Length: 282
Image (cartoon, rainbow, N blue to C red; front, top):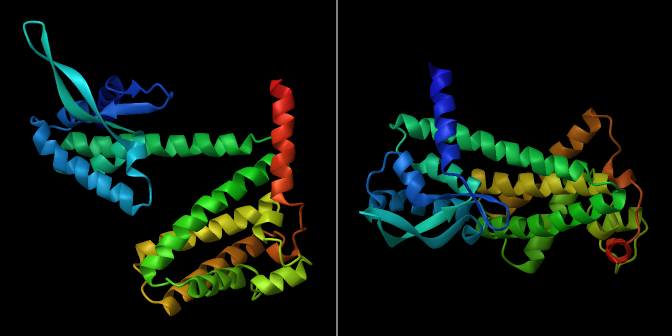
């Protein structure tokens, strides 16, 4: 009986799924609200607003997941009327069902459905990464991810009290020291024989970039999740996360990041790959 309910719920949510012009799945807030048991759309709007707040607190762009729009509804005798709605991404739907009335059985089923669908999308994206054919493509992908998540890490650190540039540099150094066995940025530069003008991240291979990306994302999450406050506490958090990532590498029998080879500048790689793609398209 339980499995039948789950299958029925999946069919219900799938039946109102739309496909945006970009090819992405989306749902109408009005239609989703009705399915979740909200007879009046106005009563569903606060749930949508809570989901927007949760999205913003997770450092995702609200406008990427909640798009204000209009749609036509039937008002009887073949007539229609234009009304406001919000088009929702899969992630937006997931946040909405997390903030909807848990007493409603359909809400609980919706939480399962969208959690599973969101995880499936993550797997698809991970598979797409694994299909990147060359080390160069992986480096470019991971370096861009580092740029994105370093910004998010900086925002999370700022909330924790790491505000001044010099303080953020110290905060970053703690993360490197944890991951690189006590080596700070200067020591890593020296150890890898990099020039002062060369950025560490720009000369990492995909394995080293992946370790640093994990360090950055996990520190960001821990700062927010544990509501860390104060520069010393933020620095200690970054160090401990880096240290745990290092311990994981050790347990897996991997090469310590300071011993991984230096690679050519990512800028050179990007330029070469861009030219190669241009020739192929021509």
